[in-house]
Length: 352
Image (tube, rainbow, N blue to C red; front, side):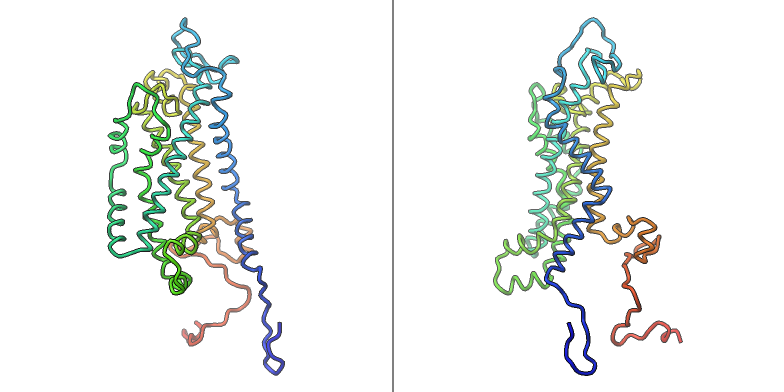
């Protein structure tokens, strides 16, 4: 539209009301087309389905000895696709049944740890004062505590002669996995609580919980999602390590339990690769899927990573260099010359 009718009237582009909506749609479209997100999401869906239907489609009872005549693990065959153990237990059934336990523990640990991170980190950053000092001290204690020895002590109270609860194991693991996410959320909340929109909400009399829930939390959603994925990865690795060390009942099947029995029977030394390769590969692929999703979210919220992920052709189109100096965040420059700010002389004049 044209402002004024006389000499010097400036023509400015019209700003439509749906410009912010279009920007949000463009961001959603960009993250939905990310190869990392698509590959990671596809792999994660596969493992979730495996955890849901795995025990239902397992061909045998994972604890049943199908034969007592041969004490040597059998290689993969038509009857046993992933071979058997030394007691002729079907390894495919153990892998399918153990996937549900691993997924339940990891997701439970991720949910509880993320909830603790949000509650403690956001409260500490928004309230400030003595509350911030006390919660920051609690976060620092959680960061410096040695996780594995603490988990060994806590899992020592689990009964070894009964089938432990996956939810209880997930709760125990979450105790050591919330502190890092809480530290990041506290820092981000400190940067948001002094923004103009938060101050305006305080001036008009909004309550604290409403400001946190409707003003601050929407800006923290990508960070919360990234923290959740990180803690799920932590839960997968920690649960597998605890089961591999024999701290979980050996009859409670998980991928770590399979690795524990394989190690106790020296499967790697004797060449029984079908005993330890499938569960180890399953743990690695599940962690890879979560890491790819985490990297995709990081590229979505971090302009430096987003620009670094461009192909060379797209980088040339946007005017970005292919390599950036260390510590410098790349910024796409607008087309055409840029007028200097008021009171700032051009660089040519300064050098002359």
